[in-house]
Image (cartoon, rainbow, N blue to C red; front, side, top):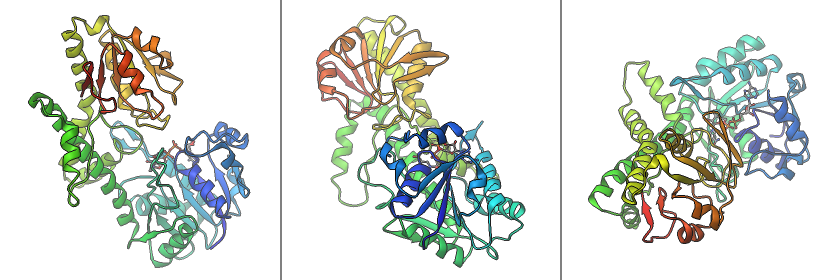
Amino acid sequence: MSCLACVVGLGYVGLPLAVALAEAEVEVVGYDVNPERIAGLRAGCSGIEDVPDAAVSTPGLSFTSDSGDLATCQAYVLCVPTPLREGMPDLAAVESASRTVASVLRAGDLVVLESTTYPGTTEEVVWPLLDAGSGLVAGRDYLLAYSPERIDPGNPTYGIRNTPKVVGGIDGPSTKAAVDFYAQVCDTVVQVDGTREAEMAKLLENTFRHVNIALVNEMAVFCRELDIDLWQVIEAARTKPFGFMPFYPGPGVGGHCIPVDPSYLSWRVRKMGFTFRFVELAQEINAQMPSYVVTRLTDLLNDAGLALSRSKVLCLGAAYKPGVADCRESPAIEVMKRLRRKGAEVSYADPYVPELVLEGERLSAEPLTQQVLAAADAVVVLTPHAGFDLELVRAHAAFVLDTRAAVLAGDRVFRL
Ligand SMILES: NC(=O)c1ccc[n+]([C@@H]2O[C@H](COP(=O)([O-])OP(=O)(O)OC[C@H]3O[C@@H](n4cnc5c(N)ncnc54)[C@H](O)[C@@H]3O)[C@@H](O)[C@H]2O)c1
């Protein structure tokens, strides 16, 4: 199936898909409401770490913020943000993107929602907007499906091609059309019966991760009191060849997915009178981790005869995970804010994040040098980017609180 495709929303999810389609010789129009984003892409700047600048010039790929340019497209993939607003799903971008697509939709076209959302969104939110705006009827005049995005930014092993893609349509022809569409860029397409199953599959994956991270984070807190090295425990447990999958403790959870997606499901089930207790407990535990990191650091400084309020603290890593610049919901940022509120003088190093604004104050990243390390009373490892010279850290930091077990053990290295 080759057609003129349109990817709506050109961020972490949409741009890699648009590039992959163009590389598979599908003609693609990338559409984004942000004109600055389009100007940057047209100037050859990807803005996403996993997408090299050269890739945005792949033949067959064009960019626009004018919905009039979409009129001849035949397949639309919606990759727009789905944040939480005061704990509630904010589907404003999905609704607005659906209206845009409805304004250009023609009989025979395929529409796929990829944004992560609660089960029922494709049928209850997107479908009515598409029908109303186009005067067409899904299932009769056009095809409609959901396919969760599983992209893992910064993952060098798994990308669009070799990560199986789950697809579910509102009916058989919609599912088939979506399967054929993704088969152009994915080696394995996994078909489920409907859009709700596909929506739920994504939420199960991320809730599973969220809950398991909370499990090890809670264990980290009492393993410390028991004087047990949890990382060693995990390495031992993972030697079991079946029935166990390792998860690691840290300063909390971040990014656009893990802290957000389970709340979509929790919100949806609450509307039916249920409480999703696992998610709520996991949220509570993971949300407490930044504060636990600050408590641990305060105690360690105290042992060294120092007060946090008069200490210089260098934080390593601001992004929510290694290898990316994305600071959305980053627990590292939360730790830095809390340290500042306690009066600490906070600086940070992050090769991916040259600047950040913390509660109105602009900070610039420090280079990770011997002098910078030596000038700090304490170093906290929050996001261990591969580029960090952790041996240098170990050698020159007064002491290190390592929330990720990234630094080799030493007299002045303390794990979370
Ligand atoms: N980032 C990830 O790792 C990841 C992984 C899997 C799933 N997801 C999900 O994919 C979706 C998109 O996430 P993202 O990280 O790519 O977001 P993003 O913020 O990086 O990019 C979204 C883009 O959509 C554009 N946009 C917003 N409203 C629009 C509209 N009405 N029409 C056209 N463009 C619009 C924005 O300008 C932005 O460029 C979310 O639902 C997210 O939960 C993200």
